[in-house]
Amino acid sequence: MASMAFMIKNCFAAILALAWITLPAGAASFSVKRGINLDIWTTWPGESRWGESDVLLPFPEWRRTVGEPELKALRKDGFDFVRIPVDPAPFLSGTTGRLRDRLFEEVVTAARLVQKAGLKVIVDLHLIPAGDDRSVGMKQVMDDPDLFARYVELVRQMARALAREDPSRLALELMNEPVIDCEGPAAGLWPDRLKKLFAAARASATRLTLILEGGCWGSAEGLAALDPSDFPDDNIIWSFHSYAPFLLTHQGATWAGDFIRYVTGIPYPPHELKEDERDRILENIRRRIRTDAPLTRRSGMLAYLDEEFAKLDTAARLDAALSQPFETVAAWAGEHGVEPQDIILGEFGMIRQEYGSDAVMPAASRAAYVGDMVERAEARGYGWSVWSYGGAFGIVDEFGGRKAEPDVMQVVRDLK
Image 1 (cartoon, rainbow, N blue to C red):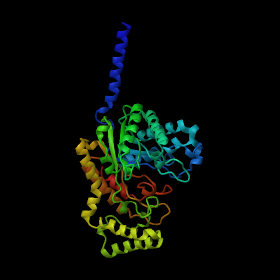
Image 2: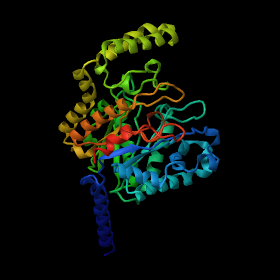
Image 3: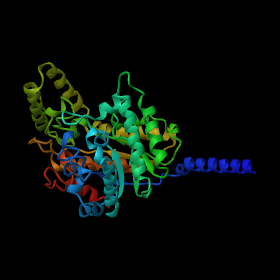
Image 4: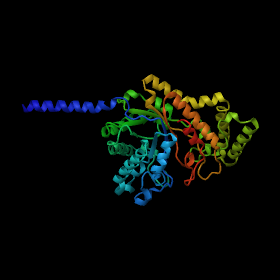
């Protein structure tokens, strides 16, 4: 009799375990349409001070300047969700030991604050490059197997911390823009790593929708390299990012390679420029390259400028550049039976002003670009999340809490 009871108990446990596996496999429990990315850092405190409560808390740092009134204003403006970038580095650093548990609580508090304001939330684990003042970044996590294993455990712990939240109001994104599989011998590594992250998150949070994206900076091509059948779970939203065309969206950015920092002054759309104005703008860029770029790079940069601008100098060419990522994702989705509502354009946007630079992108250009990207996303039935609330790409604030021009926000308001 005891043996029979043991068998029944084990059968029941097996059925329950199977239910846990299959329960999330209905339609995604989380759905969104129009969103905005909040800021990840504004003061950029060095790792040596991460053990100090008044330096690291509240966390994420945007909570010092964005509260319930500002979040409610976003809801009123037409957004239905925000994406919260959460830097994993403090969770992986040896300087934050006594604050580690508190950091998880802070993320939950931040997510609840957003929901209280009437918005849904994506908690986005958002690695950024390491530097002189921080030891952990994307490269370190990708290159060090032990550190990647610790990142997998962080994903497990974050999923556990969020597991009791309303799955219709909150989703978890496992890694932002993985810098892997772009080229070289590492190509093809990301799918297996993503499986490990997915398994860790799903083991802790059986009901939450998980946001997955491809390699090579979360690009459309990176997403198209994934096979959804490797993730036997329908409670997934697939994300891709697009800042195409890069020549326009990242003008003046000093952190985005050694070429684009010399490029400023090209409005959107560039094909509407008069010939003499176009020539003047391009010659100014060439002059900066000839004067300031490394000597051995100048000729290559000048040729690259002409090559990239030629891809955008007519309405048809610009349309092709904007549309190509969407077409790549649509073809992938059609091949694998992924529904449009399960796809999100997780990041896009146009720089307003690089920190410390005098060059400011005209507000009308930024609004036109965002409007064109939103139109493409919504025509496909994809959700979208513009980058970002403040800072270099800010559409609500610029630097120091000063308000950005209202043009981009008006694009969103007019969608209602």
